[in-house]
Length: 253
Image (cartoon, rainbow, N blue to C red; front, side):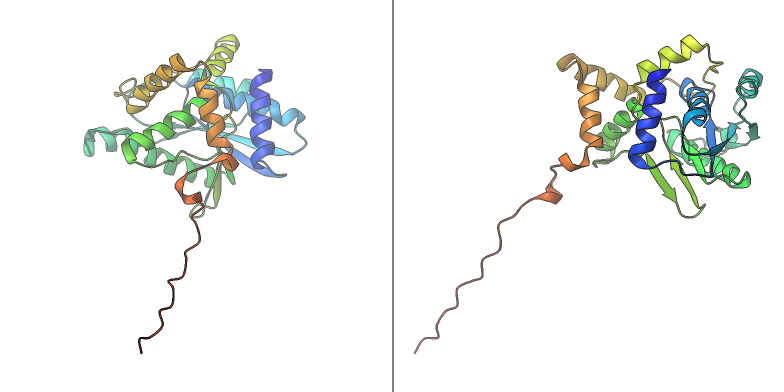
């Protein structure tokens, strides 16, 4: 857990995530990362010099009947206020819209519902549990499927809702998140999405595994390349030679 807290502190201090008096809405999916984030932010609250409060929100997508009581009980045991917000997102995505590639729409609707819940609870920050592997996978998804160099940022301000999304676990490797979650016996919920395990993100995990066969620390190097913006060397920073003025020709006599 020490490394988890170290990663949270690194992200907080580097990107000025949390300020005095902030109220943070933690988006809890039931997965290992969001549960670890909830516990991590509660522990970080104890020794951080910046006072802040927490509110955990879990979205019920209405996809299938699932018992979220263990997660609710866990939040209560560590002293984090917790609420389940029931939605019809699953019905919209899979039954009404019948999306063949549902992840994009589902993600958009979930973000909207979570942000609305955050505003309702008076939160000015929304914390998501994306880890380092998520950052890298999103980078390659954007590169290969959208032809652009892009990934989500550690801090993103949403003007329409007047809330700021923060991702305190962006420097935490997924393998450490999994190990700590197992050690703490977090009440991780089984994925109840019909396409879980068959997404483009799963394919990107295989891509990164391949890179690690070429360089064992490939994931760390890629993350450093993303985070260290002063090292960027793309074409928008080309140093072109100054344009030379055309020689002036004397008029013929």
